[in-house]
Length: 346
Image 1: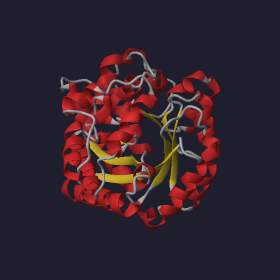
Image 2 (image 1 turned 30 degrees about the vertical axis):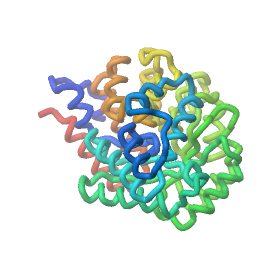
Image 3 (image 1 turned 90 degrees about the horizontal axis):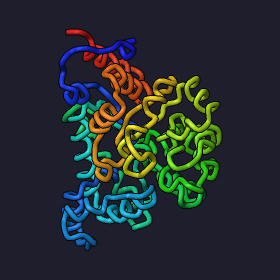
């Protein structure tokens, strides 16, 4: 397999990383709201912000844990009010993703963050899907939406959200679970996930970021999760590591997010390379890049620098991401062929 071969040559590493055909599988679209757009939309919609300028917003992006990030994340989402707002947010992300070599983006969105503010599915879904269609026409980037349930809200609220999404289910590829992980085990959402699986949606779930390894097991067993988002604490349970490796369950790892939210103290201590070496299907992603200091290529480059990843290992992460996507098989094979061509000796 090409990804197992040590790559040589003098290609600039940043150009190499951006040239790798890849998928991004762990990206919260609301987490791509850059300070400049935050102020633009606040002005457009008459929303008063507790910041004087973009620099003040960035200065606030110093987090101590997941909850400290979520507090400001939900505050920022309040500027998203019209279909055009959601269109602009999606279009800006997909332009950045395309520039980073992303062929397939599978993006989380949080409907409860918007419906609780009186912004309905017709508003944000129309904006999102219109921008996705226009981006595919312009750049051929393929994309899909994964509807997340907020785990700090009750499981019944997740069921209600799924029912509210009924008219849009043909535009949604999967369901996920995000927000505060601590003290919110995945089993609380088994009913909502059963409804989603019955409707043909693909299940994924955040687990093993701040929560214990048992939350990863719960996501697999109670929710039927096909991918684990984050999953870095799996290493605390050797049997779970073996299970994930044997099943080739993808992990959507987000290095810069883990650093920003103090999941790791230093990127040099991140376990991404150890998980790769253990045979796990690791992918590299950006999570909430406007808040954590980098989009997907930045995460590849930061991991390469901190962990000494080889180009072969970076290529393996890209290969894993394409294989782990929920895109149709023929599209995945075409992108994998493009990856092989990119890696082939000149």
